[in-house]
Length: 147
Image (tube, rainbow, N blue to C red; front, top):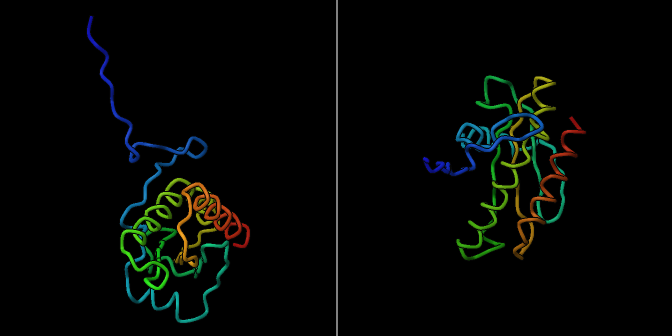
């Protein structure tokens, strides 16, 4: 009798059951180009808040963005002096987006849009991961409705 092999379930192997999409947050989905970042914050973009986060977004041409939605996460040093706390908040936001990005991607792909987005942390206090995820889902749903 052969023992059954146990294959670890890594997050890059996870899929969303509703859409059968892999739940990943790859390099192409991260907003890194300085020109696009400047355009996002120069004006003409729209924003919405769900405390402790603000979502700033701007529709762009398909040729400018690698993915349908690219995301920038910002936690100001003014809010948390210690890098450990800033990194924790960024990790919480990334994880919440990774698990729930299908809410926005379905709408964006159906309409043939490309978005650049920035999530900015507004609070001086740390929040539990469940609260961060709840607020980010709220923002993504409101954005999907607005598009």
